[in-house]
Image (cartoon, rainbow over all chains, first blue to last red; front, side, top):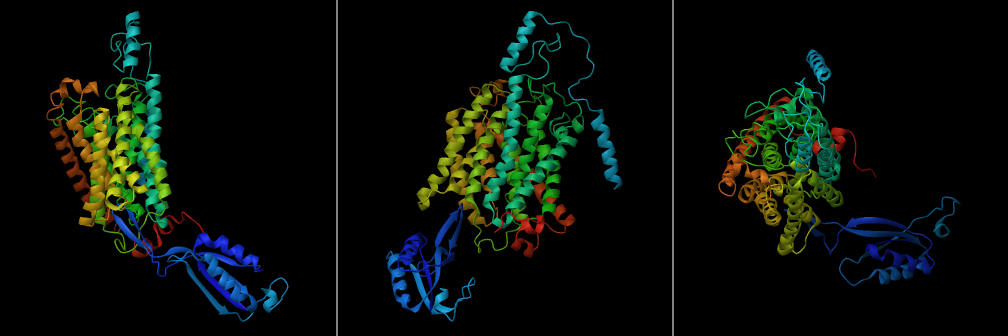
Length: 112
Length: 479
């Protein structure tokens, strides 16, 4: 059981979600986030004042998946979210200790 | 407490003794002839003095309906410029933690200035006194009824003229707060503004607009300086703009100015406010004819053209300099065009208005982008850069381009010798005196208020948290 965190361009969210649904991923958590990587920020000018905005808006997807789906899910996210331009984002994969479905008290793979 | 009680007692006496709409018992005049009756109607249509004045009883009592309807509309439009026009224009430009502080200041000024105006502000400004200040004859609106005051209008009730002018008195100190936004104590702003009205606005407005004002070139034979100011280039924009510069320098920069980002939190609100200012400005400029006549219509047209030219020029410069015409550029240019045409709006032709608008957009762009960067003062929302620069340029250009073709009143004996010749010099003199007066008074008042309020600025912690929460106990946005 792994946790996948993907930071992607906001306009790619819909495509990524649909692709993950197609391989049997049944849930995810989505957050609007801000940050910077190699893309850096942009400049805004208001009258004479110039401001550098370091943080750009991105979308973060978090999902917990059984081990057998991890490779496929990561490949799919990378394929779907890629534009080939700087700022496409990153995917992080980490090991999950456990998961609990609150309604039924199911544990582990059964809970995700 | 005693002082307050005494004030209330005196105020109550005045209120109860005033009888709006009734003039003193006058000797009975003869009934008017048919010619005189027709003459009164023609006078109403042409916005001229009644032919029955002093000769016969007029069958047209009080103000004229058309002129009055336009002036009531104009008064509401000018209030609309402050509430909520300016509140939104300024409110959108501050950071989100300070939007309510700007709105509170606009509302509070609308309240307190109205009461000052009722108490003695109107009287000191528009009552006859000497060249420097009016008298107290209209304190608590005594004698300010529905009969016109021929000093200012033939066909508009005195009380309507009073309430129309009140709206100018409200927006003037409200313009100033743009320069000192996000860091001045609320109580210090209010105390400063009240004192400023007495020391700067009431006197300066009396000098330029009062029936016996010493700079009222178009309305006072005895004026020493023959200045003209149609809707407030000197009275509104120069006083507020130059005071704003002095006050923001005395106050000092915002914490982190030039280091931390201080972007406008909502350009959308700012744009909405700009639209309201532009629309409201028709009441400001066209209403300043104090009649629904040809002069008013011409001012309506010049106001439109100057605003449009300014609105185009500022972002055009941005486009040439950096490639992106900004919404704030459109907004700033429009307001600059409006502020700059203000003193000239009822005195110049439409073609000149286009020229004034272009100059306005370019000059205020230069002031806000180049001069401000060079001298590094923190005029937060550019009250100086837009209103002082625009108002000053407009005041001088009004002197250069004023013509009887736009306003027949410029043909009056007292002023016609200056029109087209040395009027610009009179404008320069009046503007310079008001400028120096505004700056000196502001610096002195700021010292007085600072002593009384234990400093003008909020503490660093409050400034960081934001004035909304710390000074007003509210937040503009939740979640």
